[in-house]
Length: 494
Image 1: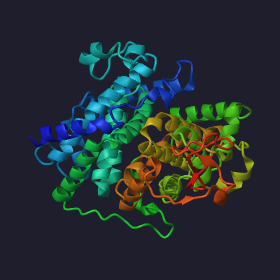
Image 2: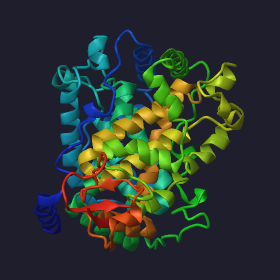
Image 3: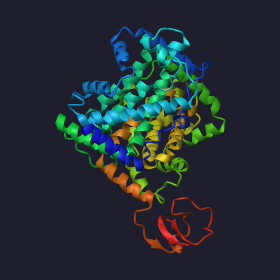
């Protein structure tokens, strides 16, 4: 009865939400790799590796993971957190899993329609998969992206909000679902990579769902009761950040080690470095060089166009404060992993120049894996997308480009950037356990809606400031019609 009631409440609250509009992966993610690309060779080599794993414990897990239902995921994550998750033991968490699975399936279906048909590994090579009796059902269904990887990472992000004390274990468990889908022979590694990024975009849409937010809050209270763990949200740090580095998820605990120099991933990394060098003389290359800048003002500037209004300390001061208080988190969450592996950066390992030499001496002794730039860009895009879901695809497309710029300029390997985006999504989940963040987030929503109080002044008090409409659109020159505008972050009559 409680489950049905919660679904009714969630459905009732859908009238004013954006979560029903599934994010369109085709607008912010690249499609499947061409069969003539090095990425495809990497996919093949991972497929070959997966076949060697089928007789191991990973193979057993992969077979069980395939086409799993919500109760299976609950059981898998139970082992990660040491608490039994089930319809009887934790009904609110179970309700959340059941409800969000529907959106996970819709998201996968929508994504498959956005990209061209991509043959599954067992179809491409006319070989038997780990689950041969289901091959006929999937032969003509595109493999891109992976359902198992999306579900695993989606649940990991949601559950890490509910059980913040176990976040690293949860993220590690969620990551494994993607690896298992390669072992079955039903998915390529590129299917998995895309699915995890799509999962983070879907979680943003779910957070715009009033009903889902209520379910998350009920699940948090339920976990605290059954686990006996009382989570205390930290105050702002001395640097006015929502978390210190040691309070953030530790990527060493949930990401794999960076590729060794003889792996398929390393070959792809080298190819991407070479491709990046060829891009440098182009407009895309110039954007990558500009994107070396990771100052807060620059970040908000590059996301303003996608967001649909100018974001800055003067036009959106409360949003600026929110972003200031999370400014170091994306990079900070990569630090332990960078220091643990100390992976050499491309320009150092290959003894070549970057596209932006001034930063070479500063960064040459800082580990490359994962990318702090990619993590920060993806994190900011996710937070901004929660504030403006209609702009989500454009924001994530710009964040994706921002991360790729690190490959083009020669400061990071592609695998550094891929991992960095996952770190950014993990931090996004962590922020939803900060009362300081959530409180400021609500203030920002009011600011963007125009409901925060601002005092009225005459125009001559801010003559040099840009003029904006009440909706936040910057005016080119003086307004042609009389009315109330925003100038110097104040309402003015012009």
